[in-house]
Length: 486
Image: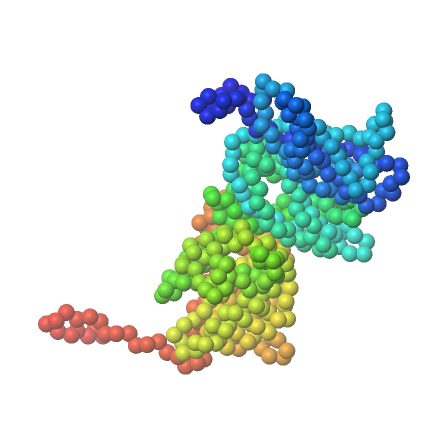
C-alpha cells in the first residue's frame, strides 16, 4: 500500500504506486486424456475495465515446459490505486489441456505482490561454476542458476534464471543485465538465494545445491572474487565428510561504482605499459562471443565494434570499449587463444628492426580449449618482437596456462621449441587484497606480470644484434666550456 509520503500532488492526480506481481503454481491438474510427457504452461493476466467490466489482457509470463509446479520469472507490474477496486483474472494455458472438472481442485495458484521502490539502478553480472556435482548418468551435468530474493515472511520470490550450459561441471553462464529493483527492491542487505540445478528434459531438474548472498556483497569489490560454496543441505546432513557440491563466482560485474576483475587487471597492467607507447592507441580484441545481429561466433572481434579500426585511445578507451561490448555481445565458449595471438603476431612480423615491441595482454576466465594450436602460435611468435601476458580470472583450473608460461620447461609444438620464453601467466585470485584494497591488489598484479617484460625485450634485441641508439650529448649552454667528468 502506498504511504502518504509517496504522494506528490504536484505530479499526480490520483494516488498510485507500482506493484510487482509474481505468480507460481502447485500441482496443476492436466485433463485425464493427456499423457504427461511434454507440455508447456503460460500464465495470462487480465484486468477489468471500470465502466463496461470488460476483461482485457494485460500481459503474460514466459512459457515454462514440463512441470506441474511452474514458478514464473516474468513479473506483472501494475499501477495500484488505493481508492479503486481492481479485479484481476489469471488464466493458465497449456499445450496439453489443463484439468477443468467443476468442483474439483485443479491445483493452487500463488500470487505475491510487493510495492516497488524508486530504485532505477541496473547491474550486469556473469557467473561461472567450478567442479559442480555430476548428475547425468551418461554425461556430466547441464547446470543452470535460479536467483530468488527473500520476503519478510521468510519465503522467496524468483527473480532471474540463467540459461542451461550443457554437459559440463565448470559452466560459464552468459552475462545478464538485471534491475537492482528485481534483485532486492532497493534493499542492498536483503538476502539473495541462488539455487543450482541440473536440467532434465522432463522438467524434473536435479537440485545440485544453493548459496546465499546480498546485493551489497555482490557489489563490493572484495566480493567480486569471493567463491561461493554450493551446498546441498541433504547431503551435508547425511555425509560427515561432505564439503560442498562445487563453487560459483561472479566474473563480469558491471556497476558505475566498482571495477570487476577484468577491468582491474586491465587497468593495473595497462596504466603502466601505456607509458611506453608513443601514441597510446591500443587495438583491443575480444574472443569467445556471439556477435550481433546474427549471433555469429567469433574468437577475434574488435571490442569497439569496428573491425577495420580496432584501436582505442589509451587504457580508458579500452575499458570503455570493454564495457560497451558487454552490452552488445553474448559471451560464448569455447576459450580459444590462438586467433588473437596470431593477430598480434602478424603485426609483430612486419616490424623486426627493433623500432617496435608488442605486448599482448590476455584476460580470461576459462580453461583453454585450443591448447595445441595455442602452443604452435606461441612457438611461432617466440622469434618475433612480442611478449604475452595472461591473467586468469575466477576459480577455474589454470594448469594449462602454467605449461604455456614456460619458466621451468620451454614450450614446444610438433618437435619445435620456442626460441625464447615470451609468456607470463598469473591467476588474479593470488593478488587480491583480503581487506578489499583495490589499489594494493592492482599494484601487486602489475608488479609480477610486468617483471619479465624487460628481460624478454632485451633477449630479443640481443639475439638480433640490435643495439640502442646512442644517446645525444648533454646540452651545453652557448659560451660555456665543455666539461668532462671521469
